[in-house]
Length: 390
Image (tube, rainbow, N blue to C red; front, side):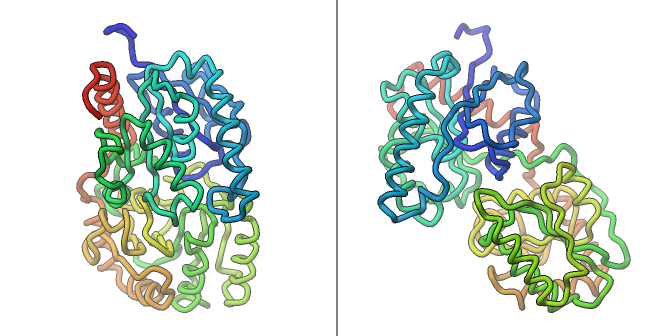
């Protein structure tokens, strides 16, 4: 790479399913960016279908990893998962996109393991992106030791999506010297500065993958306790992934059992997320544990919505409870129901929360996220070329 040429950055993803990490990367690459981006990942999945192969050359031949292998304690599943990582590394190692890259950006922890296995000779700088805390609960009993033993020792830089996530990384010489927190691109192109609050609440919504730990069942129980039989409707925006269709079936059954089947709409994946957010009156985030970032929370704040979120993790870094949103105990439908009753009954409170949400400091647009990534990529590449101590 000459001084006048843009840096060639290869983005590696272990899945193309439209999960939070994958959609964040797609948003990053959809924006104009100062580096020459290429993408390597599996063929199955739709997260990157919007990317033009002319603008972002792609290879989609990485083997898909076995579902659930990283979290399984079963020896056979664990062995299959590790074999899948090695197979993906062999494919990546042979790729022209990999050989030509000036820097490799691993979009997830599994992708970082694949990249580390593919480039044991350390011929190109590696930036590992940590989308969740470095814990067994997040990465699993297989993923955590593999990430520590391979990806972290090999990486030249580490991006965390929140201070909560970064705090889980031990401050050790074995870990990358270059670390930073960068908000994931969450679809923010512009922000609402003047909230639009209706006198009556008509719609309460959740956005997120239909997955048990996201807490849609908690939301349905709270909605039923607070708003069953009223004119308010609940909207679930998101689809199940990675073999989680049974949870959606259970949610539909639960809505019927709670007597709110006619008030609940399952929208599936929604492309026009901004339009959806602008159509609802209250946004709910109900994860059962600390969310690493909570892109939904950032999206709601940017659209000046009254936001109710589970306390802890990333959302707690953005919401000052009672000011620009309300934090509730995770997994507590009664506490969430009480907040919903209060918000539905108080247009003034909804207006005050939305006004403060509109002024939340530090929220980055997707274009600003690109700038932060570009700066960090350049820092890591420069340090790797000049050879400072890691």
